[in-house]
Image 1 (cartoon, rainbow, N blue to C red):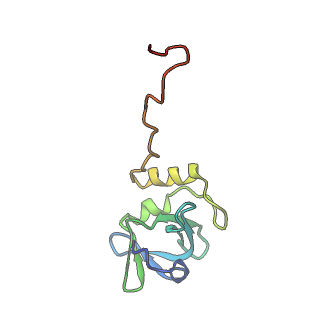
Image 2 (image 1 turned 45 degrees about the vertical axis):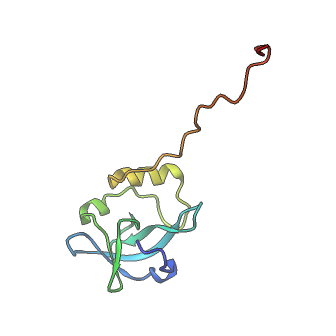
Image 3 (image 1 turned 90 degrees about the vertical axis):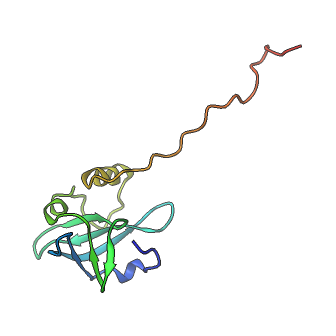
Length: 123
């Protein structure tokens, strides 16, 4: 998604699925802890319904509406973690898996020879 958009300006906007069906209205936007970039939107899926989390990265803001590249049924069946609370890394991982998105693993520490073992000095 376009990162220059202020996440506060997303709240209250309508959201649509890949087929153009209305999903609901954006209630909250969740920022990445490390970068501060908007990462998830909580979308109110109906008057008496719950909020569903959708990833903002593959989504697009078009003509003032959020267009999510997933089917409405998949969105409505997303794990429910409630809104107004911080998403844990485990919850985010569950959401990424639900949407079939690849999660970048943290880089592994290369296996280097950092020095010689004590007592193995060459002469």
